[in-house]
Image 1 (spheres, rainbow, N blue to C red):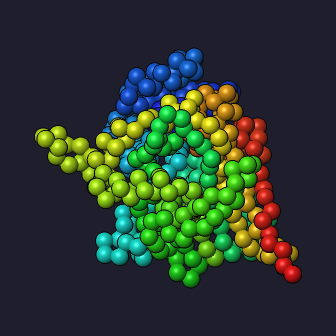
Image 2 (cartoon, rainbow, N blue to C red; image 1 turned 180 degrees about the horizontal axis):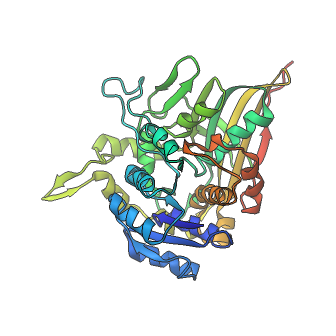
Image 3 (tube, one colour; image 1 turned 60 degrees about the vertical axis):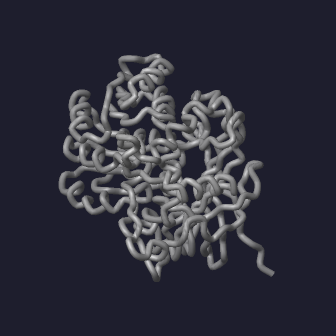
Length: 406
């Protein structure tokens, strides 16, 4: 398989590192606006011909299409901030190759009632073009990171094997990671973090469809496995809520993330000051987006691994009925930063985000996953993916959470 990797940040580097030992990968083009960064990753990989470096402007569809044609790639892997998704998605369609991303096209809040009604939903741009992809017999596999991605595979597994009837699927994400030397240092793209945390969260219910609520709503304390412990989680906008109801029969779908009071406070302050704005403004004759300034002021998550310690957990809580009895389970994956740094040279959050994309490439290459159109991970059988998780160094766990009834 030949892959054009658009974006060689923290997750992009992890994708390349995890894919490197796999014989099915013939070539992966490391394409980034920051060529110096791409060459830094290439040097770590020590296989220049297999991982060539190219400059790319992800805002230009022509740039993306040109490189895809130059290297005759089979797949374009989108590993940049989702502000560029439309161009990369459309370029893959134009060239006629498989497309994959880890975050779908961006949403726009409802103009008059943002905390109750959906405006443009995550992925709307892509799903509106699904018939075009079907007619051309092309596949766009959207949302194939860890969240979304792995947890969506878990939802399909739960539906097929663990439940007769599902009442609710809820992504629950928490960590006990610490970063030494910084008062505030997000372990993932701050651009994406601001987008998903400050937008109105989406909830899905069978009788109501998709609707929104206020940021950080419905707090609950969730106990995470493997020593992470109890953490308060809150509603956050995320793709799973837009993906799962399309293929999973459930009465409700939610996404809740353990952010912490300090993190929420910083995000609220950025919003209050207008520093979350992604549109460019004039600053003394220079056009710049405030959010880009915030991102530039913070440390690059790709270079925080040696300062991090602890574990991160991504998982799916499922509630329903099995054999006539109530059942609750939590399907999860825990990544330890120490192990990820030792094995991949990448910190836990980006490594955990990356592995699902590489497994998906593996399954597509070997014909274990097949399809056309715009599809989420739930559209594919779950067993081949889950069987490969341990092989790739990211084993899953299942925790029974059924409450005893008297």
